Image (cartoon, rainbow, N blue to C red; front, side, top):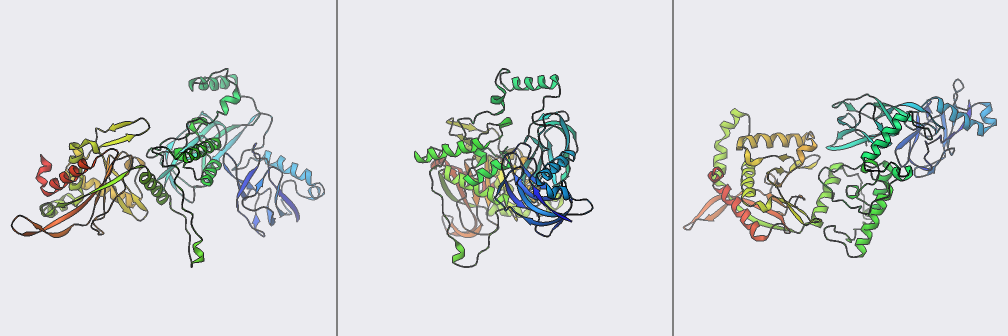
Length: 552
């Protein structure tokens, strides 16, 4: 056996890259092309493979180090039978030639997870594989974003997958032309699975044909770019001045790993950054421009609707007080925390309280038990709440709006879709029931039960959690007398329901035992005034107190 240095191969034009993971340890046996460590460039996370089979004798870098082509990242003893690229007596005598031999072999054998070395021109075939999916396996494909024959750029989305109730796009690690698509919608993917075959243009190469060049020019014209505009200017647009975009529900972020890392370090919310790259992809310059604009607003006292200038909370070292344990937030918990904070900071909340007498409603509901068993549907109080809220939204349409503070517009909705907050082991989820005003109690009972079960089983589709005009959140099954729910912006109101309790109610002659349901209506005071909020809860109380009025 002979010991040789493990060097960083050609990085496909990238300059310095950061080491984000050490995959092997001293003493590990590896095969040729087994991953040694993972680095991150502006475009992708890339695994650097072993140049041959053997045993690792040392790793000379650590996580966070910056490396470039030719840098030594470790040493290994190569197996006598196969050795490593550029190893042997000649490599020991001439280390420089060893590096060149390793590069030569890497050119002959395309690697699985990184671009091939730069050449003066030409093309090569690549099979794109599924990258790391943040620990998830068997995630379904919900959309194919490219077609065979498409010309694409690096980081253009290839397919969209869905995991843990979030959607993510798998970007292309190369620029080139799509060959064969190896997956279909509905297929389940894991890290390392084959995704597509494509032809990759080597850097510095000329277009394959005049026809291809003309098609690219035509695409540029369609995008509103001038054909005689300098190519460099077309490929590298400057960050736009307006870098803030109010995030919409289900907003997707188009950004590479390095950009996401920069955003995490700066505390920037990428859903609020307007991308200036190809297909609105977010670049590092966009993130930096966004952060700069937010700092300027903070120094000027902030602007209306952005909640800028609020100091953060610096945490102490809790370990000094006793034992602690840290764990990462789940995706859902992090998303919920961000949305709740954004709503609380941007919406002036007020809560109106009311008690509804549901004694007669409960008697009627319980009387439907036999009918429900025949239908296979359980009648709960929720369908009555949905129907009453739909009636109130129709009679008081100022609750069925959203505000566009940038344009100073009120968006009035002609439909009534209501979200129902569901407590699941994975966090709070809000499926949406559409056209509540057009459905009967049994239909609402069946649909709400189905959506709630989907939420608990993590089977909700993104479309089933979008489009609500109003939200109902109930803690009645747990307890409590009242609470102040946070408005699910861009909605302007949310109804909180607490636990019903028997209370003595004066009927004018004596106290009668009545089942009273506490209601808590939180609303956006920019859209709704206090008098209308009182009218809304009073109307709800009347509708639930005499359910016959729901038929009128």
